[in-house]
Length: 317
Image (tube, rainbow, N blue to C red; front, side, top):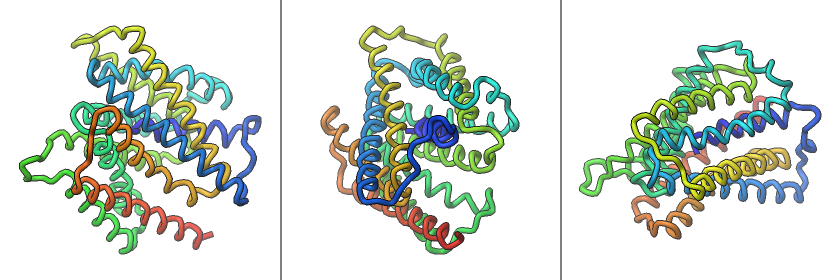
């Protein structure tokens, strides 16, 4: 989930900004809207399946190993993206400090998601990570000087209430591992804040390349403290995860190409449904009523913020 934003950014740049490899310009026909929705539904399913693979691998590999072995399979995809965007010359950085900070934030997101998946149900982890847009909205006035009206502030408060309902601090059944999922959300929001500050001085593929390098190095650093060489079957899981991520992001990009973002963006929250279904089928996880109620508040708040931002954007046009 945490690397998902990075890959989406990279694929969007490669496909939208390369004249030789663009899709057909988005149209508003009902047919394309349906196709776009189907692409987003399939894309979120593949992304959630990859997160489930990560959770499965945590039984045999620590977070650093997963970062390293998964990171290896990022570079064949990156090689294609770099070639599509003009070759190795695009790897020259214009804002090295900013890109490094963003890479560290993205690393934190990936690391904390992986750690949280060790002892948290898949659906609960995803619901907590989806609080990142709330954090991003709350931080925007202070770090980006972007105005946030009272409607969105109320949505942020409602979403944070949902987080508290899910984690139930001070209750006997409180699971301390939720701290890592919340840290993943904070890291994701930090990554997105830095991305906004960076602008377009460095291409998305360039940023993604250095983000992947940082993650790979961080994973490699942990190997001397305990490592396991994957079996053929486990390598298969790592490769499958890479393939699923690749096709998932292509589907997501196609969804945004086929129709307006306001139609398909809310469908990203289907990840919570997929994670609940996969969690039940694979691990027998059944979220309690408090988890459902908290997740509903988080999702509702996120959708309302998306609605308000879309409305404000259209008003400015």
